[in-house]
Image 1 (cartoon, rainbow, N blue to C red):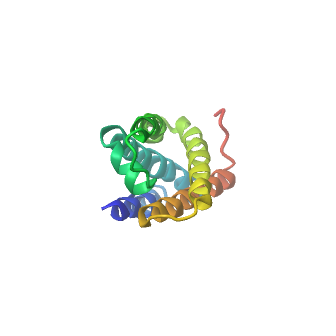
Image 2: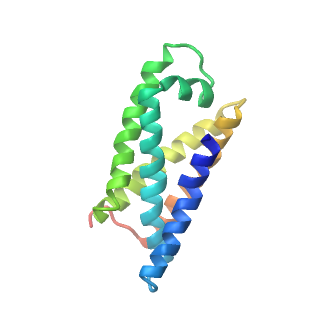
Amino acid sequence: MYLISIAVLMVLAPVASVLLGFRHSPGASVAALTLRWAAFWMVGGRLFLAGLRQVVQPRYTAATILGIEHTDSLLVVRELGFANLALGAIGLGSAVWTRWTAPAAVGGAIFYGLAGLNHLRAGQRTVSARIAMISDLWALIVLAVSLGLTGARLNR
């Protein structure tokens, strides 16, 4: 289920949204559509859903993703969930308030870049941790490249 949700939120939904965006606005920029929908799906959708799970069921992230079995970690995972909910809400809001798109993308790129590097430097990884690492680094690349190509400004 984890792999399916990652595939949908990190690849299928953003690509489908960009293609639909071209249908409604044939002259639209690929980079601008990618930025808009990556901020919504990758930052908004994924982080908001991850945050919900971390708040409600912190043991899943602790054990399955991070490989930590000790219950002392659950408080920290729940706090991570609050941060993911906050950043995810900004990403989801970017679909309504387009001025939120660049800030959501910048925050998401920073989060995914740091999380991906953290997973990368970890020695042994579970399959779920590998999926998290690859998808984190993928999100960093998509968000950073689309930000760069659009010349998005945070003060618009």
